[in-house]
Structures are given as C-alpha cells and as structure tokens.
Amino acid sequence: MAFPNGSPRHVQLESSAVRTLEADVARLERAAVQRLRCTNATLDRSAVAFGTFEQATLQRSAVGIAIAKSLACDEVHAGILISPVVRGDVHTWLDIRSAVALGFGMALGQAFLKSTRALAARRR
Image (tube, helix red, strand yellow):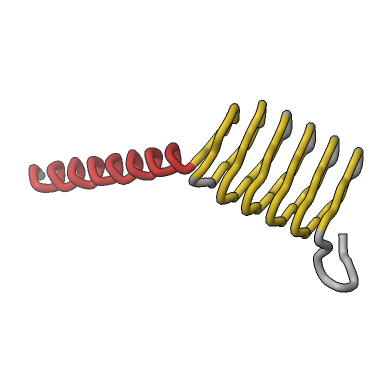
C-alpha cells in the first residue's frame, strides 16, 4: 500500500489482503499482509509473511518471520521468531534460543568430524 506522503500514522484493515504495509500503528483483523513494518501492531486472526515491529499483540494469528522488540501472543504460530521479549502462547519452528542451540550443535558436530578425520589421517 503506497501513500503519497510516506507512511500513514494509523491503519486499520479488516478482511483485506495487502502486499506491503508500513505504518506507525496498524490494526489487522482477518487480514493477510505479505510484508508488514510498523511501530505498534495488533493482529487478530490475521496472517503476515514477514513482519517487523517495535511492539505487537498477536491473537489467533500466523506469522512466517517476525522480528520485534516485544511481542504479546495468544494462540500464535510463527515460522521464525526473533524477539527478546515474548509473552503468551506462541508455537515457533525456530526462535532465538533454538537457533543458538542449533548453531552450537552444528559447531560441535563439525569440530568432532574434523578431529576424527585428523586422527584417521595420522593413523595412515
């Protein structure tokens, strides 16, 4: 959604689908947005493919990738969630803690394989 004077201050969408939305405050109800960027967002039964927020309240919604400073969630499903403060019921495929654990596990596995290969090369 393009606006002539830049981003609008407040946007409310109901039963709508939008490709890109930038606003200070956004309220979405039964809406779908491909790319959402706003300071404060409230989503109710909505879907967002990629969203960046300062603060957001999500209720019964789905988010592909969410990056936020603070999230309050109620029955939310997210693919990738990056936020230091998350409150409520959210189901993620990958969040900060699991990403760190996955990266640490991959680093340990790689170090183990390298040391095993080095020991095998010495014995030859």
